[in-house]
Length: 167
Image 1: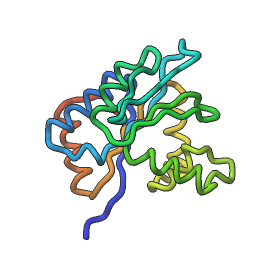
Image 2: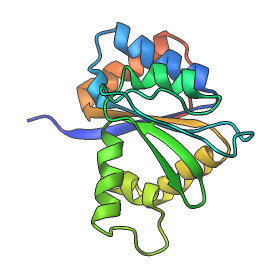
Image 3: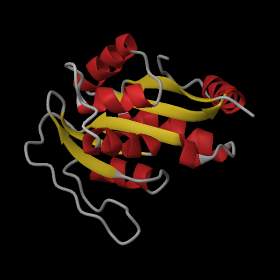
Image 4: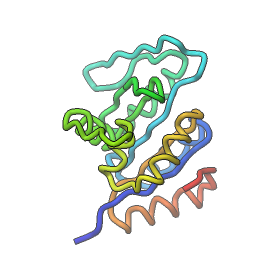
């Protein structure tokens, strides 16, 4: 049996996050094992989103094109308004973890809803703070879920593509 956990990559721009996801897809990586979390631009005060039958976002303010393209690739797209972060778009298995944290009232002890979701997928609390801080300054968090081998494969693909990310 293989060990399942997650690796995390922080990208400064949505362009580099999208490039990473597309490179992983072209390499044959299972796209259902990727999660992406990020915010829209600061200039957007009234984000909007609606979904088609295929769970694809039609519009989300000025970042609709980016999220629409990414959400066509990833599983379970969603938009949340999270205290301390504002409007956050996300897709992938992390959405289920966030919904579970909210429904199960896991949010306790000063940890945010997103922090609770990250903790549920195995992120140490000191790292939760790091990732939430990155999101607050409009960076993007890519999560690679899966076995140690799958995470190693993703790391090689991203390294070979020379995509700028911090782990």
